[in-house]
Length: 397
Image (cartoon, rainbow, N blue to C red; front, side, top):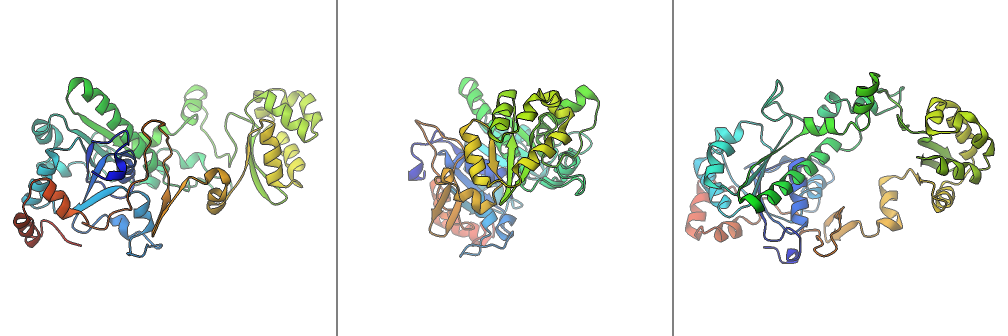
């Protein structure tokens, strides 16, 4: 067990991580940050995310890989070989959770199917499978990637300007939320296991996750019958809630209620807007969005954005500068959000437990870095390990 993890809320939990790329590894990194002992098992060719650069670190590993793999120990196994699967079964003997994101059917082909094999052998095991579509329905078993699901599930259709057309959201938001969906499912299964003493299968799919992101667009459509449209940065249900240009850059103004609207107008000496019945309520402001946007745009065009944001926020009016990524991390509020250790740079933990806080784990592992250590712990002898290496069951760096 990694020593700096001794106080995390998941301390003592062992996770076998067979996943690659983003959703699975991010899920297990969050478990590791909170004290779980995560063993990352890579295929002989390695997790392909190691190659998704530039930029690369000084060891030649992509920054992308480092973003979602800290705090883990690593070995490589050829699961296509029966002996590789035997090693995995040995590792599962004292594991609590298995996470995999192979194409549905892969584990069954290797005789590692949860229902048919693993549930019987390891009744307390929580088995989490992450995939594009799961194994049911007309798309069951198909491969899925974040942007494909953004397209298929309507997210792109509400993102972008009418001029740009539907646009991919600039972060892998479906993968990212699927990591949280998987982690939440694992934690719920652990809570239930503490009562029943039995594991279960947890499934997280990019498809279901992408549809769940359509708040409030899906409900708006279900109740109104109207297809949600591209609104740029505006909001379908709230006004003013949009991007505005100042003298030295842009800000985002988000006004949710009449009290905030009055304070905003008072501060900018737009008293005529308060008296205008077109802007008397959110529903009225939404119906006259264009006129409102034009009036606010004129009022902000000569303002200094940082001063404006500071003054309005102090009045309780939500507004923020539209920052670049470096500007976002330069904010005083973000001082504790960065993790820098030698050659490793990352983002800290988004949640904070006061009694059992998590800690950003050790630097991401090199390929098969901990193979010897993990196998010795699992009862393999040096000679047996050497034989596995010689047969290619245990690929080396």
